[in-house]
Length: 162
Image (cartoon, rainbow, N blue to C red; front, side, top):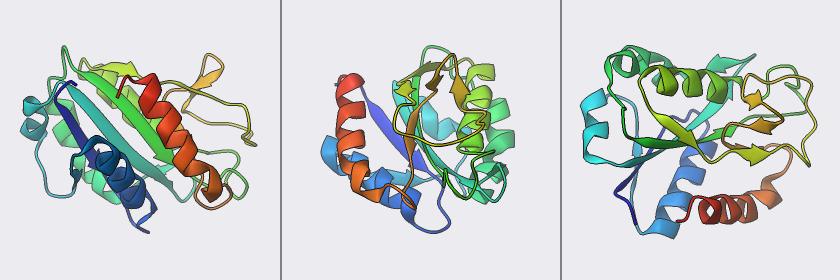
C-alpha cells in the first residue's frame, strides 16, 4: 500500500467521524488540518482529504485558513482522493461545493485527483464538485443518508485499491 496521509477539517464532527472511519479501515490515523503547514504532505504518496461544505457553498474554516498553504504546496507526483460532506436537500444548489474548490486547489498545486464517484442516488441541483457526470470525490450526506456512509466508504476505498 502507498504511504497514505488522511487529513480533514470539521466543524460538527461529521467529517472527522468519516476521516477516522477511513483511517481505521486502513490502520492509520486521521489528522486535523487545523494549524498544519503544507510540508506535512511531503511524507505521503497518496493524500485523502476530507471537507464539509459550510453554509451556502463555503469552505470549512480550517480548510479556508489552509488555502495559502495549498497555494504554496507542490503536490506534483502525488495522488489525491477527496471526500466531501454536505446536505443535498437543504443545500441542493451548493452540494459539496467546498470539495470542488479543494479539488481546484489540489490540481493547481500539481496533484493528480483520483477516486471519482457516481452521482446516482443523490438529489441536488448544482455542485462545483460535479464534473463530467460524476463527483470528483466521494460524496457523503450524513444529514440525509447516514445509513449509506459505511458502504460508500468501503466501496470507494476498494476503488482506490486500498
